[in-house]
Length: 89
Image 1 (cartoon, rainbow, N blue to C red):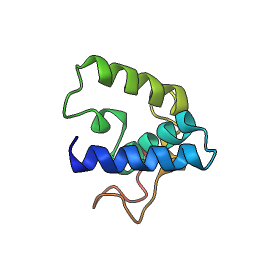
Image 2 (image 1 turned 60 degrees about the vertical axis):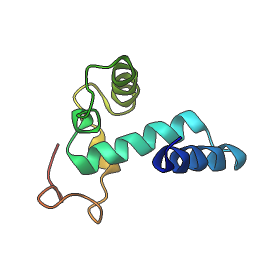
Image 3 (image 1 turned 90 degrees about the horizontal axis):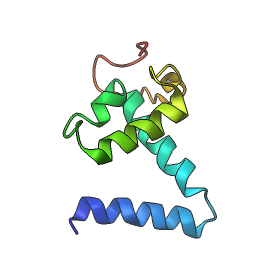
């Protein structure tokens, strides 16, 4: 397991140990990244056609809508990429 995967797994395990709804935790984390990166497809850009991407897309669309209309509430202007701050998705 690479270090990045290990850190993600550790964060999920910590959430679980703290009684957090892990499904919601993962969905909200993905949507925050999508909001800061410019949309759902940006989260999936490295392998958008995979079966895993299809499931992740469905999870995010179920959370923020099929067009990402709910992503704005997840945006963090402090971590958004330059040029993305405060822009509508």
